[in-house]
Length: 314
Image 1: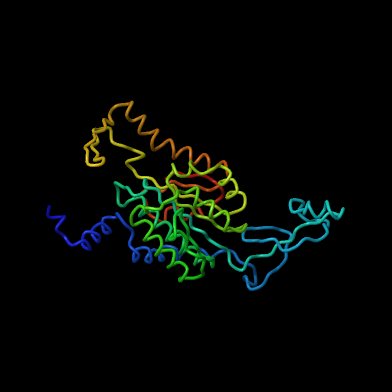
Image 2: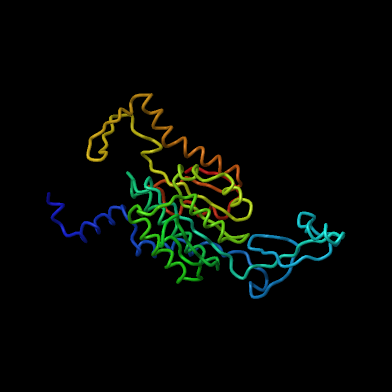
């Protein structure tokens, strides 16, 4: 074939241009899409010092306890110290100098597929890049990890340097399915050990991967962190044509009769049902979630960062 005679670099470049693999330059250029976002809310004096407060908000960490006073929030009573001392005590919190935004990347084989505009894996990389640039815009530190071997984590760093490290990792992770992928449950267990309360966590995942994670992990994520999950989908998975659809599976030609109600029902059970179940699961754990199609604008999900806990499909 003529295609096989082309130099390997040309073939790889063609694949990138076709939306099969992410390109670092494209991920860097996405920074322009977050420039117009409103800046995060800060105190009158920024985040230069630590001010103790008995009100716990996002990005706040425990500082100390003192005796309870009238007007203190009863939800922050330090029950252990109260029991030991015999006097009511309340917890005080202090603002972290920099919040951590952690990007958790699912690298399941199902993501390396697409029929419109780009592969789901490329859309995941683009969404992750926007998350990294948003973290820079908001003054957060940014880190990333996936379930895998030695090349499975990017340590946290601030500013453009931290974002570029994450973008480089996304380019590599989503170029092709990693041979050492250990799954989203392993990635989230790693995240659980790294995170401190109040961090922002953005998960890029296939719906089936979400369902493979123990509910307890999602519960902890929703309870202690500002968590968002982007569920990567493809138009063919959600709305297949009512026609004969040929596939090539391991070199063999397979034809699905998608005009058949029975076949369409099995198709829905394979693709739409996991998406619906994943959204219901995440909504029940107070985690914001959104389905992001491979042909949708890559920044369509950014409003999810500012909205209340909800589940949306677009």
